[in-house]
Amino acid sequence: MLIMALTAIITTGMIASMNLALQRSGNIWNAQQNWWYGIGIENWLGAQLRKEAEATEIDSLDEYWAQPVDYLPIDGGSISGRIIDLQGRFNLNNLVLGDSEAEMAYFARLITVVADTDPVTAQSIAQATKDWIDGDQEPTRPYGAEDNYYLGQTPAYRTGNTLMVSPSEIEAVRDMTPAIYRALLPNISALPEATAINVNTAPAPVLQALSENMPASAGEQLAEERLDSPWEEASEFLQAGPMAGQGEALAGISLDVKTRYFLVAGRITVADSQTQFYTVLERADNGAVHVVRHATDAY
Image (cartoon, rainbow, N blue to C red; front, side, top):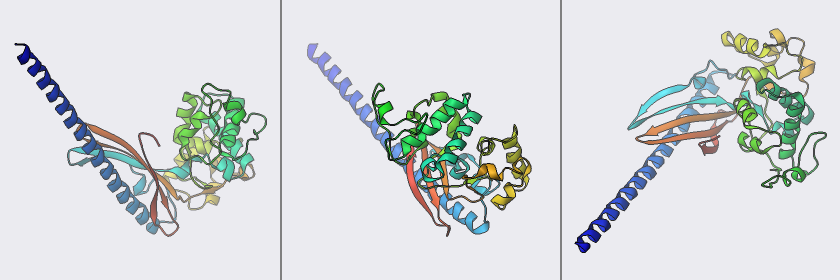
């Protein structure tokens, strides 16, 4: 009886181990399959961006690339996703690559527009973000923060002292909170060069924050105005409704109607496996598209 009991226990353990190994193998296979689906999607969308570049001189939200795909069936699952214009967002690296004073003021305004915070906290985050990116250890006065601040935290850490690769890096900046980060995320990007704001694709808060003299709800008004007729030139935007007379207030802020950097954001579901993927694409002046970077789970 003892031998039979031991045999049963060993057999049960072996079966359980085999089932676990099979499950792991299945998960690995599904994850790999999802990854290749993602590569295929980015190649297809890259081709769409090339076609759009040949068809028009501007980028706007009425173009094919800007339409989300809510459900696309594939073998054993589905795909959903969209392309996002990253130059419709505030590029955090502009705090160093552009006119720092103008960009910090712009970013502080954006924080107050999207988040329930006071101007001092917004200015503190803007200056600390600039310090996080720049290569020196001199805090921007009066609210900046360098290693001397972060090394006093628990746990201690240091500033990045280089360009941000992902906007999620801003979570480590002084005075940033989860609530402010969540409010900012749809309105910020981290691109490898100085970029202009595409006024045809920028969310209303990004437009609202362009000038401290903007009337209330000006961002929503501008976003609605471009639906019928996107601007062909940035100079046209500067004459639109609430923007009239704001040109001087925009000194140091670059505007455009065309985009180089896009984000492919999608979800692939195959069997019980689900993958959230992100790909940053750069479209050159000649229309050629190449991958800047891949990421899963978070951009």
